[in-house]
Image (cartoon, rainbow, N blue to C red; front, side, top):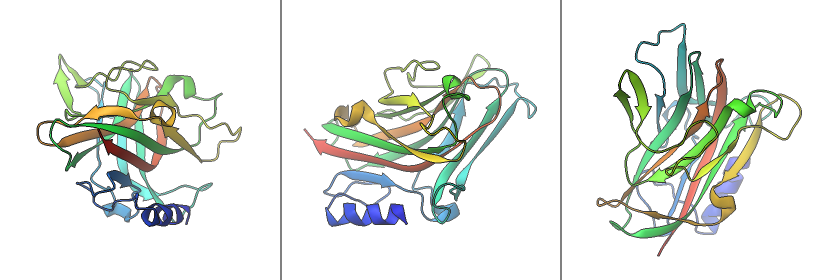
Length: 230
């Protein structure tokens, strides 16, 4: 019940919004994926980095809400991402549009992403980097010269590009391979400045940039962004 307790605390403090696509006066966007198969909270999955010629022996992708695995609260849901690309680097990500901002207005934002993974520092961590960002431009996967390419500057591998506000390890500090929840904050929890587009929108994305050639599985447990208009 940990998610519901935290949500109740935030709601009591006036910090939580249940609106998927717009902002209330608290200027908080909160996705916790708690409605089963319908609990995507407006997030959609995409993949980039793989060749257009890749077949099922090289490429495998699955993205859907699912109950959290053993080691966590198995009565709660998360957004489960499975990916495998045996020929090179692949970016597996979720994206979401949020409207209701003042067009072209600047905001201070703190982004928090709760990941559930079972990886340790001695496994695949050096080949998989978690990345997240917020952009006035929609994150897209486009076919460019035979490769499905991410349209924003996310950087390559463990290097962060200009569009990335949060990056880091998917490894738990625990030595076992059970699932654990990792809390990741943009700018070490300090606000960063973002600017809404002409329509008063911002686009969120979060995923893993992986050079691991075998299957990677992780869960988004919760994604929260808190804004203050400047």
